[in-house]
Length: 116
Image 1 (tube, helix red, strand yellow):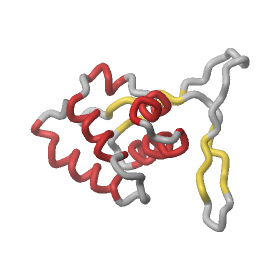
Image 2 (cartoon, one colour):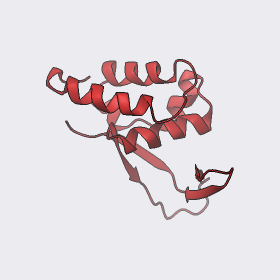
Image 3 (cartoon, rainbow, N blue to C red):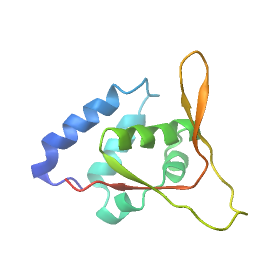
Image 4 (cartoon, rainbow, N blue to C red):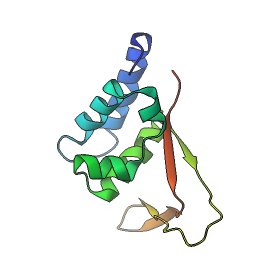
């Protein structure tokens, strides 16, 4: 849940997320609801892929949502580098215009809320 003293900061960062790209209908409202009503533990342990599956958001858009959320300061992203090479890795791509994409990473993600 958002501390009322941080409401202005949240609104500012969420507005930046809204303009980051064109989002599918209800994607942002689902994220906002999760942030406003989720416990601190839920937000600390949020997973983009699980979030996407739970709310019917396509995997690439769910990943994009959390990468952009991190970029505007709503979340802090941690990259967990695990020694088990048998783990399935997710590849994150960033569009570089003209249809060209650049590989950002291929490691599992964990995101957490950045303290106000």
